[in-house]
Length: 166
Image (cartoon, helix red, strand yellow):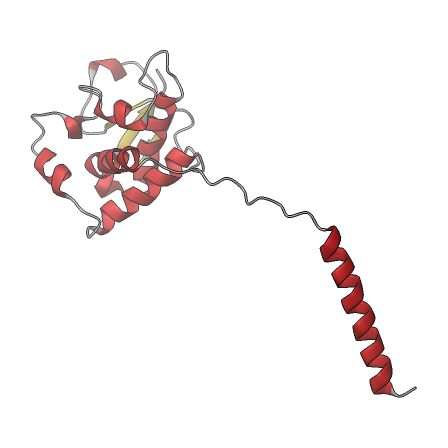
């Protein structure tokens, strides 16, 4: 038997085995990919942009973690990221008297920091964002000293923000 004939027979045998395997294979469904509500993503991203656009990716991820930590505590907070973000007097970027509110409402994904915020918001809402704050549900910038933080030790300091679990 020639070398070419042996190779052809081996190839034919392998193809026959592959066909048999294909017949027995079960088609597996693709994993479910969470669909993020566009409003939840947008409001969360605007909150990250408004509160931490100068803090870079890690700073915005930390604020996203605070939002999601609140969502996971429905006894104390609303149960969606948008409701948590827009709860009165919780995230100052949404306060009617915040001078940056008009900017917050106008920002688009042409702004690189807002594009980053959109990406982080999506990761946070789908549950794949790691929490760099270790469970914080409050934060403030180092430039202020709100009464709720007096005497409380921060559990994380990231950039110019101090993070607390209250």
